[in-house]
Image (cartoon, rainbow, N blue to C red; front, side, top):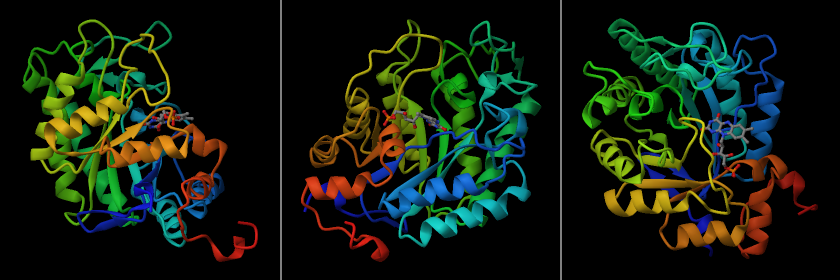
Length: 338
Ligand code: FNR
């Protein structure tokens, strides 16, 4: 049996296989209320029908001004719990596990009142963000904790904190975007402090039986930015704080070209896994079953996240099972087709 189809237990949650749907914003909330609608229910449940082991629901904003766009999914209010619960029930009914990514866009918000660790804009097309004061920092950390409580009430198995792609938490972590002179900047300890406090706060409202993932940009590429060594250090700290898996993406902290090719971010997942012993997820241009199998079989990562390939083919795990000659469950109504 290929390892891609081995189950994996983290805390009290058992994933049926190692295939993960990477979080992908749908910008599909036309009413600008952050509410789950039919699109989200159909979109995510289709991948569960396709036997994706873990579905990570797209970046959900923990505050209204933390949205990338006005059409983002939201988790900033108790009014979001009902729709999200419907979504987890539908995914669970197909046997998949489901996570939600908790996000704040910081200076990359395109809605009013963008905030950031320092008043530096991403580029000319973005607003100049307001530098967060201590009160704003405290409120935002609390918003992540409240969002995790809502995720628990909505029935999610896993929470992923979005600390990648140049959004708010990444802006604190990176020397390119954090010029603070107080306790939230200045040194590695200072730049890590915001994420550290978000993790601790989320751990108080999220369940101890359920895993906590963090997505990072494990390389920032631009001169003066964090590289993999910094993220090995941050991952060590996260492990001590009870984070269960680091999902290893890269880039997008400042405008900078990235050399992109199949599996280009896998070495980050491998380096963090081997250096710290924390579980990792690999993501980025992973499209072929043999490629995914190679990653888990060689212990380069514990989970394989697929993004765009799962937009093209919601039933990718079925194709992978066929190509890798694995016997996996398929939905009974589809048996005659498959
Ligand atoms: C993304 N990506 C992304 N990443 C993330 O952490 N949170 C998000 O909400 C989104 N949103 C998003 C939307 C869309 C339409 C795309 C295509 C991508 C990045 C995504 O999760 C993944 O890391 C990259 O797409 C690279 O993986 P693939 O697509 O090469 O498998």
